[in-house]
Image (cartoon, rainbow over the protein chains, first blue to last red):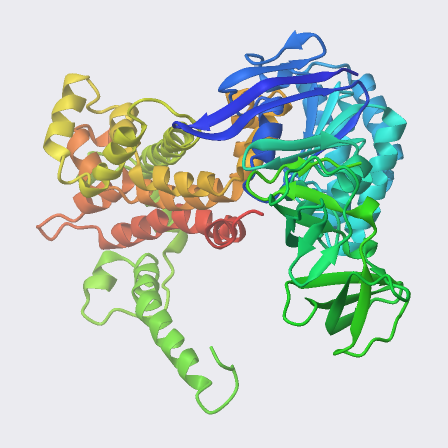
Length: 358
Length: 281
C-alpha cells in the first residue's frame, strides 16, 4: 500500500498540451475517482501513473519513490482495462498467473494467490475456461483477479464498467467498492459516469480539458462546486443555471423575478453572475412567499420522484424541478417557486468560478 | 445466396459438376496412365479403365533410376522437393513473422522505409530478379545445395503483409496488459502473439508449402546434379524429344508429385479455412 503524489503533472503531444499541471496527493488506501467528459485527459492521466504514457513535466511518486522513469512493470501497480485485455488463448487461471509466472514466483505460491483471488471474486468454477467462454461480467472479474493476484501498491481502473449493461454495471460497482474496502489498496479509477464517480470515490478529481477543476469528497463537490463546470457535471438531473445581476441592495435580479437579497454578498452591485440551483432544491412556495414561478411544459413520472420541465415564468429560461413522489401536474400549470437561499450557488459569469456567500 | 431451393437449385450443382470434371478428368487420365504400360498408352486407343501395372509402375518409379534422370530414383527427388518446400514454408513464416513484428510493434527510424521496401518487392517476382539472384547464389557457393534451393525464395512480402494486417488487429490494451505483466518483447512474441497467430500460421503454411513444392524455374537453374534436383524439374526432364519417354513412369511420377501438397491441404483444411476466414477475437 502506498500514497500517490502528482505534482504539476503535464502532458503534451507534439506541443499540444492535454494535461495542464495536475496536483494531487492521494492518501494510502484512498479510492480516488477521476471523472470528466470524454477527451478531458482523464485516461491519459491514469496511463501516466501506470507508466504507459511518458510524463512531459512534473513528477509522479508512488510512496516516496518518483516513478517518472520507472518501467510499468516495476511500478508495483495493477491496471484493469476497459475492454479487460485478457489473453484470449489462455485460461482464466493462466491469465491471472501470467504476470506472477514472469516474475518468477514459485508454482505453489502462484497457485495459492490465484486460488485466493478466485475465491474472493467467485471465479473458482471458471479457472479452466478461456475468456471467450465467459460473459462480460465474468471477464470483468477475471480482469480484476489479474490485478489482485499481483498484490500491488496501487490499483488503476480505466473505465472498467463501461462495456457492461446497466444492471451489471451497478452490481459490479458495488463489488469493486466492497473489494477495495476489503483489500484497502490505494485505487485510482477513471470514469465518465458521474453516478459511478459519486458512489465509489473517497475523493473525486473533476477533470475538464486537462485541468483539475476541483478535487474533494463527492458530497463537497455536490454541495459546494468550485466552478460552473463542476456544478453542471456533478448531480443528475444537472443543476439549473440562470443568468442574474446583483442589484443595488444586494438582491439578485433574475429575468422576470427578484430574489430577496442574500446577506453579505461580497459582489459589487451590477455584477453579472450565473445563479445555480439543483432541481431537487427548488421548492414549491407557500402563500405569499413565491419569488418566481415555473411554467410546466412536460413532466416525467419516475415513481420515486417527478421531474417537471418548464421555463422560469412565461417564456423565461428553461428550468427543471424535481418533486418527491408522484405528483400529477398537468403541463401548462404554473407552480409558484421558492429559492432556498442556502441552496443557491453563485458563479462569476465570466470566469465560471464560484462566488462565496455564507 | 437467396435460397437453396427453388427452380434454379440445380444450376450451381451443374456448374460445380462441370468444374469438377474439368479439373478431375485429366488427373484421372494420369492415374489410369500410371497403371498401364507405355505401349498401351501410345497405342492410340488408351483405356479409360485402370490397368494391372499399378504397383509395379510406382515401385519402379520410386526405387529404380531411369536414364532420363541419370539413374536417380524418384524417391530421392521427392525428398529434395520435400526438403525445399518445408524449408521455404518455415523460412518464410519465420522471416515474415519477425519482420511484421518489427514493423508493427516497434518505433524505429526508417520504419516506414522498411515497410515500403518490403512492399515494393511484391512487384519483383522471382523470374524478374532471377539472373542477379543466381549470380549471388553462385558466388555464395549455393549451387547444388538445399540452401541454394530454399534460401533465395524465403523472403516474402506477401506473408509479411498478411502478418502485418493481423498484428494491427491486436488491441493496444493487450500489449499494454502484457507490459504491465512484465512481458518483454520476446516473451510477448512467444506467449501472446505466436499462439494468437496459430490459425494464420497454419493457413500460411499450406499456401507456402504448395508454393515451394511447385517451384520449377529456380530449382532448374540452381541444381546441376541429377541427385539434387526436385520432383517437378524431374518430371520435365523425363519428357525426352525422342520416342524413349517412359510414359507410364511419367504418369506415376506426376501422381506422386501431386500427393504431398494434396495431403497437406487435406490435413490442414480445417485450420486453413479458419485462418483465412476468421479473425481471433
